[in-house]
Structures are given as C-alpha cells and as structure tokens.
Length: 254
Image 1: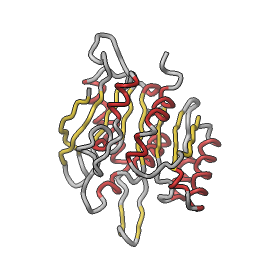
Image 2: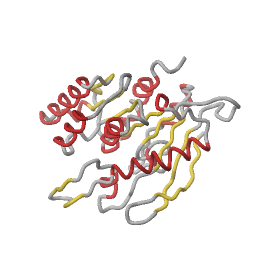
Image 3: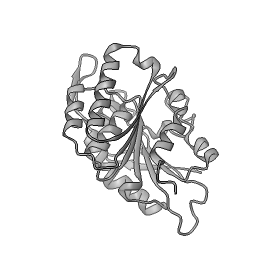
C-alpha cells in the first residue's frame, strides 16, 4: 500500500507544497510489528508512472509486494523549478558551470530537513524501526550522489545506502575529499552500481575506480555492480530493485 499526501517543504526561498509517499508493507498496521525504513530521493519517480518525470517509475511498490519484502519506503518529490531546482537541492557542493552559472548547493539543507522534520514525522506516524541500524537511504543520478553524501556526513542516522548511477563526476575533487575525511563506522553498507552504457567513457571509468577504491579504503562494506546494458533512466533502475534491496537488508531479515 502506498500512501500519498501533500506536505510543506521549507525551501530556501520560502515554503512550497510537495507530494510525499510512504509504502507500507503487508501487515504494516498489525500491533507490535515494526519495519526498517528506506528514504529515497525523487519520490515522484519511485512508485507511480503517472507521477514520474519521464512517464516511467521504479515500480517499487509492485516489487516489494511481489517479493513480500518487510520494508517501509518513504520519499518526497524533488524541486521541479526549471532553473536548476533539482540540481541545487541535490548538490552537496557549490559549483559553477557555463550552462547553469553559479549554483549554491542546498544538499546540506535538504538533509537537515529530511533528518529533523521528515524522519521524525515518519517515525511518529508509521511502525518504523527508527534506529540507525534499520534506517537506509537511496537514490539515482544526483540522488545517488546525495546518498553517498548522506552516508559520509550523516552516518549517525543512516547505516546503509544505495547509489544507482551516482553523479560521481560532479565536483570530483570535493567528493573525493569528503570520502577521505569521512568516518564510516564498522558495518556501514553501500550498494553502488553503474550502467554498462554509462561507463563507455574512460573518464567515467576512472572516476568509478577512484570512488570504489576510496570507499573500500575507508572500510565501507561495498557492493559495486556494472549493470549489463544498464542505462541512465528509471526503466534500468527498476531492474536493479532486487539487487540493491537485498543488499540493504542483508543480515537483517532474521
């Protein structure tokens, strides 16, 4: 079951209204049952094709229902401002580009809101296991980069993450410095993948090897995958649901 409702999001230039989504597994309202929680970026792309930016979602509810996975998934749609709203909101670092100009990163503000406002709301209203061990985060593209950011900077909240096709070419020097400086407690888990078609460029291959090496050097329990024929879109990411969900829940099912 997916519950969808509107919430007020404190955007930097004033509040705006967005849809929030929560998937509740079968038996979710039974007394004394509690579930791990996966927070996801780009909530409009997670469950419903009619809400998805390009008309194709991850089909997350169908996968979780068919597999009987005991997991709550909570997500909020992104900033749809055509003046790079999503990029700003999911940018961990300031940057400048010829196409977009100066972009002030709002990734820290996004995470602060998620941790201080959205997560407490979810924990209060749904049967969650709110502790770090059972709290995960995931996303793709810039949302995948934000998942890396969350695991590195907010590891006291999120013990496990999934980064699908993460934008690791975004401010590579800053990203690498963040990973080198981060402290990952023992048992930190990360699933990270990249589509075969995305790794056709040598520069991307080099970045992939560098990020994987840095994560392993820091002791992260990394599952890295090269997805056969994988592309940078929701149809491809949907096919990875079984892989990253099983990684996030590995060792916690019993």
